[in-house]
Every structure is written in structure tokens, then in C-alpha cells.
Amino acid sequence: MSRALAAGAPVPTDLTSIVSTLSAPYVSELTLAHVSALVEDVVVVSDADAVRGCLTFAEEAKIWTEPAAGCLLPAALRVLDRVGPDARLGLVVCGGNTTAADLAGWVRRFGATALPARVPVG
Image (cartoon, rainbow, N blue to C red; front, side, top):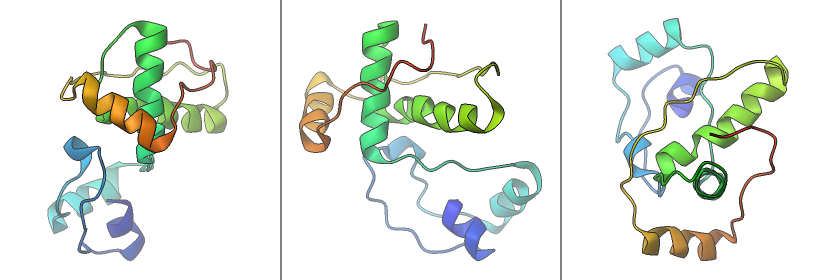
């Protein structure tokens, strides 16, 4: 979506992210039109940050998440940087489409650790 918004039209996309549940294979004209009209910002989160978010959920809130939900925390930190630390954000955490082996492999691959404790989780 971020590439399509920048181009002003749907663009081809190669799916390479571990965040497979957020990786749409294409953006339609209709979806692009809706997002252009209704969405203020699209935040892109790296795979490494998604894994860091998963670790933070596990360590701080004792919640097992998949990388799609792990994207929420690094994205929330960016939003808080813009709107101020007193803002209240609601995060809808869903999914568990990952195994312990998956997460352990990603932690090794990205050298990931939990995010800094700037956002209360739980």
C-alpha cells in the first residue's frame, strides 16, 4: 500500500516479508481509492521490528503473537513520537500463526531483542 500511495496507482509487489498476514499480493484500484480518501498514514515496519514487537508482547504482557501483531508496537512508538507521549492508543492484538521455532529462528536471524520500555503493554 505504501508503494501504491507513493506512485498514485497500483504497483507490482514481491512478497518477501515474514509478516505474511499483512502482505497483500496486490493493491486494487478500489482499495487504493479508499485508502487515499480515508487513511491518514500508512506505517511500514521492518521484519526485525515486527519480531521485536513479538518479543515485547511476550516479555511485558505475556501474550504470544505473530509478526503481524508484533508490528503494532513499533508502529505505536512512531505514532506516539508524532502525537505526544500523553496520547492513548488502543491496539487490537490478534493472531498466533507462528510457532516457538519460527520466533526463535527470527530472533537469531535479526538479532532481535525486546523494544525499549516506552509503551506500557498489558
